[in-house]
Image (cartoon, rainbow over all chains, first blue to last red; front, side):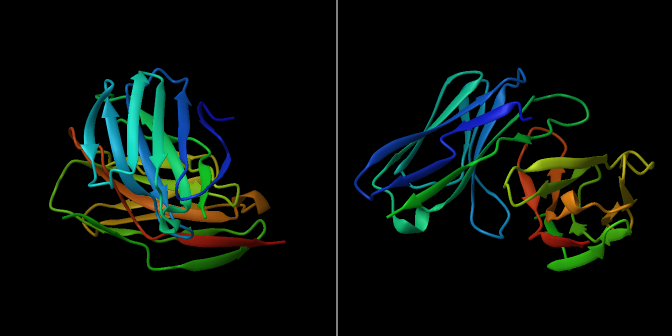
Length: 115
Length: 115
């Protein structure tokens, strides 16, 4: 069982669609992350929110727009995506400042296909 | 900049046998953390084991243990009594101590378990 949940599990969208990915964590963590992962590759960090504020944006194109409505929710709004954006999108959470480290715990991911 | 190298893209092991996955890293920092994550075909990224660099004792979690050689910058994962459910992609990751929460990932080792 995972304490980080993601919806939907699968998403197929056209290049003109607008959709959103959702992530919720039930661990009381105050940092949340979005990653993009291509097949057989490690995850690539996209965004980090710490205490509901965007702290890291890894130069992600503006067609990806993150939102953190509260400490347990994280959204990723998608608009005008390209086929190369098709990937597994992983959400993670951690508790900043914990000893020995704020270990990241991952959700099950959303498989996104852009047609 | 830190780097993480997993030199074995693919490995296989017989069920009930022991296998060791290798990981080396490069850093000039003295305080950091190392992780092994497992990602089965179900795609959930699962934390297997964590090692704090300041600890000399090797971390263990049930059938999983590490051989942490700080001077050699080596962090191998040993899986004992391998089970079919251990088949997965295994990623080694590095994290600096402090406020930077970014994980530096290796390229992964795909482990097959043969019955």
